Image 1 (tube, rainbow, N blue to C red):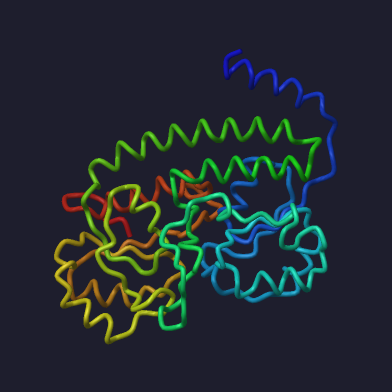
Image 2 (cartoon, helix red, strand yellow):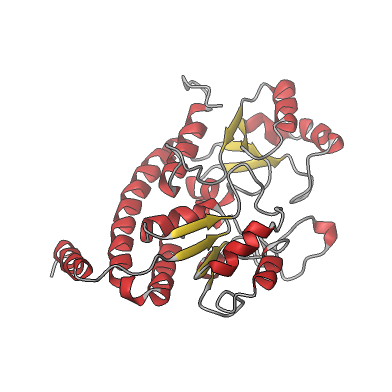
Length: 306
């Protein structure tokens, strides 16, 4: 049986399944809400953060506690990204189904190979995650495995909808593979370039594209850019090779703008996660847009890309 016939057969099965109660999902970050929406479009989703917030630091508001209490599953990044607020939400929600080790708590990082893990961390290293870089949602290689695992988990939570979820995952995987082929072709023109960044938010994507992070505005991971560190960066010969300064839309633009004034490098501001609006409403759309913005900042590009 061909893949197309297999999908058609599954669709017939799905069509015969009666409607079920709405799946309630608590997503820690917008990227996971978008992925859940692709797999289970009828789910009721509450998202704890937005693209304008640093996911490391949010307030455990009563409305979020109530959302966790009602949820059938929580979908989060893990790898200590939400260590400052998620444990409090879980504790205060008293939802026995969404606790460590239960099927109702899904961590994407558990299904990825994280970059830069550490055997030992201490405060002198900054805000370092011992498990590795948690910003894996921008990894073109690792998202399919995370999506596969999430589809399986959602099917376990909602067994009556498991076949429909699997069909949507197969379709999502096909779309993702086609987009990744396009990104790979565009990466050929970017390979060997370098950027100044602020934090490791884009590390997975830049590494996949063959783009180097020449310097970091943060003196240490998670610490805000300081005047002394920025002054030291001016003497860094790596800046001569950089083509732009890349930051996320939730970060303070002033340090990047100051360095831009000193060096003439353009500042490229992009969302660090999906925004809910085109062209960055989906994970594939987000990656396409980030690549486009990097392309537009290259020498000879016609678009400023800010």
